[in-house]
Length: 441
Figure 1 (cartoon, one colour):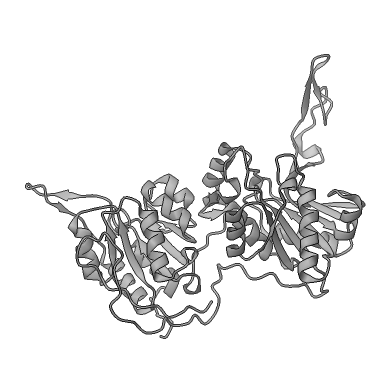
Figure 2 (tube, rainbow, N blue to C red; figure 1 turned 60 degrees about the vertical axis):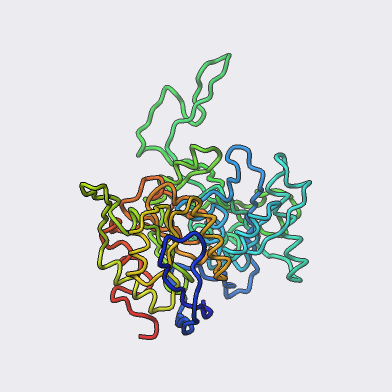
């Protein structure tokens, strides 16, 4: 993505209570020559020119987890994760989010999808997903002037859905092998039903016969993540299963459906294990905002006999920040710490600072507004719970490896290097390469 010219911000010389002001314009920020590998590509039509519409229902009125579809997992809202999975699936030509919530619609558009406003009569607790899909199909046809050939129902509540699973489910229908398809996980579990009359009885087995796992054929559990339907058949039948149905086998380890806060906590804990590690590239970022204590330092404070505080900083971080400045990226230090050492470090690095700030998220939003920077294109690096509100605001929340567990779980990317040991140098290498080459070099 081509970045626009931005004035170079000047360093603050005192503890700041207002946004540092730029005093003179700088050169135009160099343009990236190619898209970053981590940014999901736009959906591309398959060679057969079949229109494959992925519909993601995302109501705003979740009861079990308030604002569930905007809840971040690994720093990315659930609705955005679903959009990215669909955009990365080659057969998918269009992605639509059906919602009654303005914030979800905005997140969907930011992630690269179209947003369809869902009417109130099909947005309540009792409304079916099928009703939302049919409405989205009508809206798509009215907007694009053609119907979908194949329609997908994709659920936000399956956070570890992959583009490969979306693609394979769609291809079962686009190839003509099936009229409908869905994702399912294999299981060899023994299912039981408990009844008043007979007590516990086997559902999928004879309780008097216990074959070994390797002697049993697997059964399949519907994951609820993706369904594919022939669009004309779906309109005729009005539900997601008709005609010949195919299943797409998925990895049981990745199957999780978020219905309550415990599920969300599990998803956040599993994300570092299940997500493909992703770091931003230069084309993804318009600004870098850095916490200070624990991010640029090791979070320890040294005291002398007079109570004066001292901290240690890493020279590699200074090298990385200097390279980011040369590349034309605005860099800001944002800290709740009032100690003058924060401003002194900012002067040394020649970057602006806002410190002694109680509401870091509010200060960050105001700074982005004043600079004309989209928060979704900001990388924010932090280490502790007071950074979480900023994590929820930006597009690239990054935790240093020594961060609190809850911060690591909320991050979209985590450094290998601890805070105060060159973590900012590592982030700069993500954006500019290991040799910190600015784009023009």
